[in-house]
Amino acid sequence: METRRLEYFVAICKAGSVTRAAARLGLSQAALSQQLAILEAEFKIRLLDRTRTGVQPTAAGEAMLREAQIILRQVALARTAVTAESGQLSGTVSVGFTAGTAAHFGVALMQAVRELHPQIRLVLLEGMTGELTERVINGQLDIATLLRNEARAGVRSVPMYREELYLMSPSSFGLAPSVRLADLGALRILLPSSRQTLRALFDAVFRQAEITPNVVAEIDSVSMMHSAVIAGLGATIHPLSSWQEELHAGVARASRIDDFSLGLNFWLSRSAPPSTAAADAVHDLLEKIVEEKKPPSA
Image (cartoon, rainbow, N blue to C red; front, side):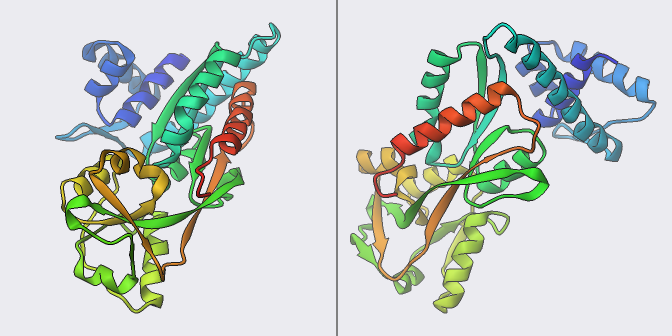
């Protein structure tokens, strides 16, 4: 079995579509489908179910995906160990950022890696904490900024900083610089779904204050949440750091919630060992960048 077929299989699972995976890999759809067929023939079992919107792993495919990721990680470790003998760090390191942390640290990390370790290839992802957590646990991400002290499955986390939360609303709402929780009852509120860490924190505060907010939509997309607020569909609760562009452009407004004592603790997490020397170097760089560039309000 060739490791490249495992790489292709993982790419298809991540993309959820043979067509999308082929485009990302620079292959034709027919060539990628042929490689998948060879892999399924090798194991004499169907690994993917075809749906109207793409593909999804079968039970056997889920098992294959887990093992393939472990094998590919071990191959990457071997390559790094060999390359390290030359004194030049190389390899691919995947880093996930929550909203706000990407804007603060993503570009700075790319610049530092290019300057100090030009042979390291970064793969950067911005997403919600729930998604990033699962990817770190499954080994799909080497490093991630999270909103929880994750310790499952050997994940290692260190605290970064704490940031206060604000009511972020469209400028058209005309809200005052400070509001109270009770004021939220008259507003259309946009929140992440119950799968996300933020929502659990918000619900606990609302229950304690005996408030039922008018939640008009649950959004688990960072970009869609921003777009919905700017479009005037509702207000949400976020740290200031993730809304700097909108605030400077005057399309959104931040209001302090006087009786809302909740803040967010940001953590820097990394997947379970073993890790590559390249991942270790990127983690150390990101720690330094966070210390230098963390939000002024932290």
